[in-house]
Length: 368
Image 1 (cartoon, one colour):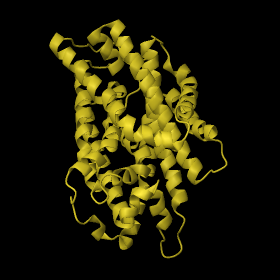
Image 2: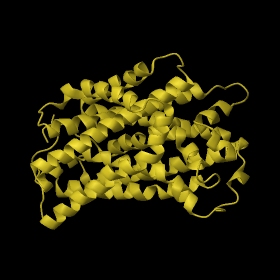
Image 3: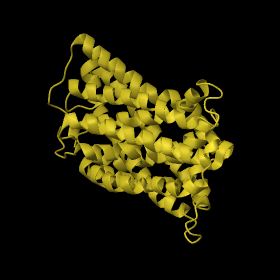
């Protein structure tokens, strides 16, 4: 590992939390209620399973190849040629993934707040900041994530202000249509939770590897609790009308009124949510840039942060011309695409490494 930066296990947790929750925070109840109108809150429990599998795979690969990312481990496991091909697949996946995240962010901001602002400007504005964070290195990313993750989680506390208006009878009858609708409701968020595999790009920097695994599970637990809280509050507030709202959490914030004086809290939601998105886009952009540099043997990844950021923004707009295409991608493509790169391929690499007896050394690592 050429970069001398190190991070604490707790900082890894703060990076992982908004990486999963930032974009899913707003649309999670709407997607789940399409399949299980009264039971979608239970899907939060099921999403913990792929998240735990992802953590096991990421930490197991790193334990076998210490100091290496999955891109470098792949080259040790299947050889340089096939390893670079796997790396290229990951590069295009991460590039596409970063573009989709940018498009989700821009779509929400433009459709709900900045109606006349060009989509490309909204998308690029945050990606440029993310590129600045990537150029600063892991140390900048981890320290900013601690602050921004705390601030971006404040909307969860504000949801508690709605408790007097909640109707718990919307939860009944439970499992009236069986377990299958709940399984369908968990399909999309399980892809989001498996994004925890991005930790593989930060494990080489963590000081205490044993605590890194514990911190990752802690982040997963908080993510599961957060998802359940969001689903329960929205369900008991909107009931069967949840599926008719594009951004149910935004509707909930517009409903809030504290003492008849504090209202229009959706502006606060936007401010806090942007910070969480900045962390997520920074983490994803970092993974994209590192993957590119390790595939092509570039010694300094920082010089590619801005070009790849702009490319991701353009890619997101070109690949997703409208919001219908975005929703189709989220509901029908990402549910298979994300687990392929975060669970299936890492599992295959780990099995090959185990069968061939290949292991890494403490040499090598992330370019810096």
